[in-house]
Length: 109
Image 1 (spheres, one colour):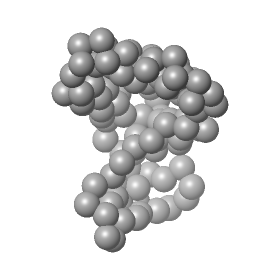
Image 2: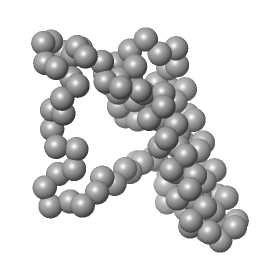
Image 3: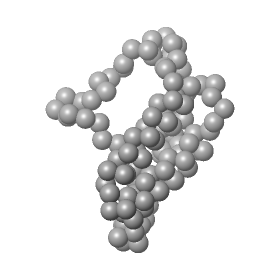
Image 4: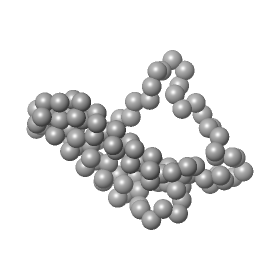
């Protein structure tokens, strides 16, 4: 599912980019896991937040600006098609769903 979402973002924001959605997905997983392991070793949640901030800035860099034409038709994709933050929410919270997450948490605890 992650690769599918990255591919959709690539088609929208960086259709000619030389990277693959799968490679960026692997990088994201490595960065997330590494951030959490390092933060646990250093007993520093701030360290994890800093690493995730770097990951976000990296994704913003490789995705650039939205293409001016939609991959689905005539809609202008430079204008938001939906509210980026839903009503009643104060922020967007990304999440990662993975098989075996409970085992991973037990291992790293």
